[in-house]
Length: 300
Image (cartoon, rainbow, N blue to C red):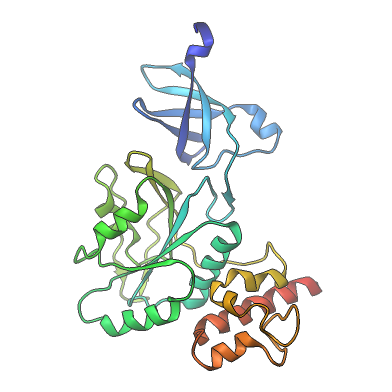
């Protein structure tokens, strides 16, 4: 095949900033591209993680145009990314203490999108075994892999790396939990700017400014996403929420009332499991709060 078709190749968007998209093409490198006007006309915006077709304008300077966005496997709004195989949600064991409600919202969002999650508690340094054990108890039934790491002591980094192999993984979590330090250990090409914990407010400085996909091996990408501080669960019905808490599954159909929402109904097998310690109270309390939020939304 000759002519213009020779100048069309496929790649993956690894970064988008100020109207430019950086497309990684295996064995060629990264091309700086603009998106054709047709996408704006159709109201489509290229996302980090998109598989695209590009037209090469300048081979020497590695410049091109995105001519087609290939069908997406999935898409997240916050962070705005596409074609994710799994999510790695990172919180600290301590400093800062985990914000459970925020963590559970993230897990629910992933569950609702059908994206498997790996839950990583970083800063599992020596002397924090008690806190780590409590976190293990809370999340042992949450349906995702739970891993404890220490970027400082390089603990369990190989295990984490194995979980990311051959996948595109979105990494998310609040500021100050050591995401950038973990990313630095997982790859050598890109060094994310790391911010120290601000002692005054015990929160991390906002150091990650845009979603970026980093190549860490053959067909292995990690996507660092800007630190999030709030997450609203609102793109499904309140009746669906219970299905996004995997530890409720063994009790479905065992409640007194068919279609039980596990809130006020008597004879509820899930509430009984909470009282007996088979489902952790923190997880259930967050379920109640999200349920109320979805119910209130419907009233207005």
